[in-house]
Length: 348
Image 1 (tube, one colour):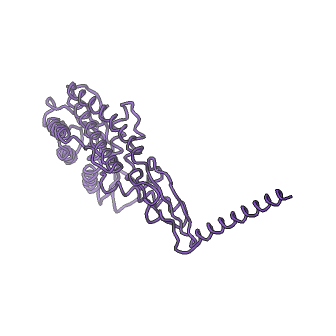
Image 2 (cartoon, one colour):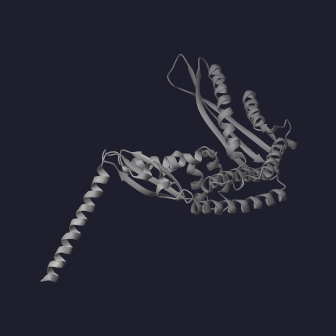
Image 3 (cartoon, one colour):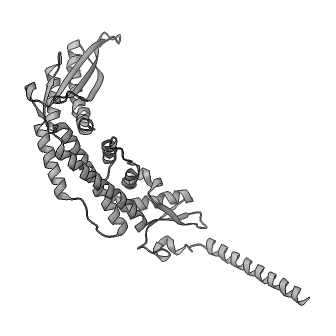
């Protein structure tokens, strides 16, 4: 009987203690102003030498988590010079190299606000909802573990850079040489940003871009562009359009050749227009199209093709044609310029 009483008393005591513990936990959770220490000081529970951390608050846990990841992203944004163009250029230049760009793209995208949901290696460490309904989330990245991911991609890119340099030294076709140098310069910029992000994680400087290599490649790139003579030709193309094309090419560092036999690129221009019947007696409208086919003279290979079209009107046919020439000039200085920068030398 005594044994039974003792067991019963023990159960009652344990049960009572359990209730006390729960009640105490509930009071601590709901007591106004009593927030967990990590909300203001994450280092109170996690070693800052081991974790890169940020806290976010919001109307719910998801909102708080998004803000925490956004704050973590901002730790990189101030020092890392990455934009979507660099990411797009990296994807394009690596397209035919049979390498996977997903991880590098994800690592680079750490600075993009829209990528915070996929922040590499970031994890929710703590979360808490206060009595007033405000939620708090602590997110963190293990410094050494994440830095190892960066180091792996940096090493791979450095091997690829060495391969590019060897190809550059062997290449005799001027355009292919230009394309390879462009690839190398993009990869240098990618690696420089990856190294900066790794430094932020490790909290120390580990060495950035080889500035001597970059300067040498940039000089060679500019010199080769100046030597890249382009001959512009086209039947029934207004001279003002040919002049506009030549200006854009010159502004991008190329030289427009007056004769064909010294050019390495032949730009063949096709221009057409036709009247449009819009049932307007007080105006004349035309639809025009412009196509520029770039050809590597040495190999005879067609490179990239640039096209655009539009509609313009005037009081007469001549007025419509004159207005279209102004439109074409403006579009060439924007769209054709982008084509030269992003497409012309994307040769694989």
